[in-house]
Image 1 (cartoon, rainbow, N blue to C red):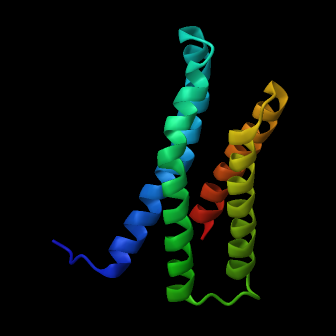
Image 2 (cartoon, helix red, strand yellow):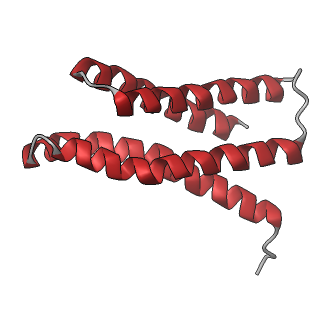
Length: 131
C-alpha cells in the first residue's frame, strides 16, 4: 500500500469538500421540483439543511486551496498561474452567489443566484481539472 502523506490528506480533503460543495448544489437543484411537490416550504427546509454542510465544505475548500497554493508556490505569471487566478475568481464568485441565493426572497433572485453559483462551481471543477 502506498504511504499516506500530508499531500494525500490535503488533496483528499480538497476533493471531498469540492464533491460536497458542487455535487450537493447539483443534486439539490435536481431535486427542487420533487421537493416542491412535497410542500411549498420543503425546498427551503432542504436547502437550509444542505447549507449547514455546504458552508463547512466551502471553508474546507478555502483552507485546503490556500494550503495547496503554499505547497505548490505557483509562478503567477505563467499559464498555470493565470489559470489558477481565474479559478480563484470563480471560487469567490461561487461563494458570493451561493450566499446571495440563500438570502434571496424572490423566485427570480433564487433562480439567478442559484444558477450563477452552480455555473461558477462547475467552472471551478473544470479549471481544477486543467490544473
